[in-house]
Image (cartoon, rainbow, N blue to C red; front, top):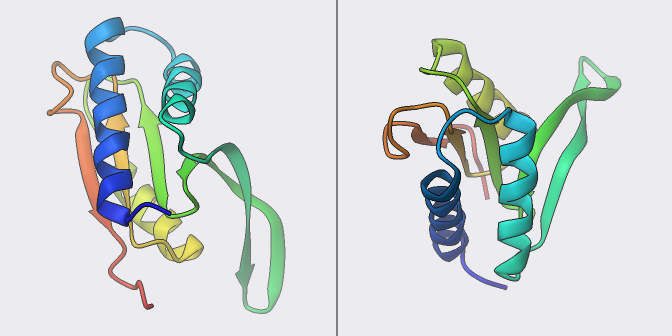
Length: 129
């Protein structure tokens, strides 16, 4: 199993090459499929549109949300295809990370002017080993 930072580096690299090769303008779903395939080609285990249950006040919500991509069961990647981030996008990822008990994830916006501008690494402040 690769360490977390190696998986993160591969994930960002795949996102960068996808942005460089396709550019902005596709639907989120297209970027999701292409990034999923790219990560798999690099030998990583990736889950796509994984349904995540949430336990709240003792009740289980079986289909609380869907995670765009989960890489090696350790990193969440949430994809967007919009001109700019809305404040809720980062909050959404942090909440997902907390609910899934993952250390960090990426928000990748393929609609931004550059890949760097559209990439945010977000940490789960509540993460406990």
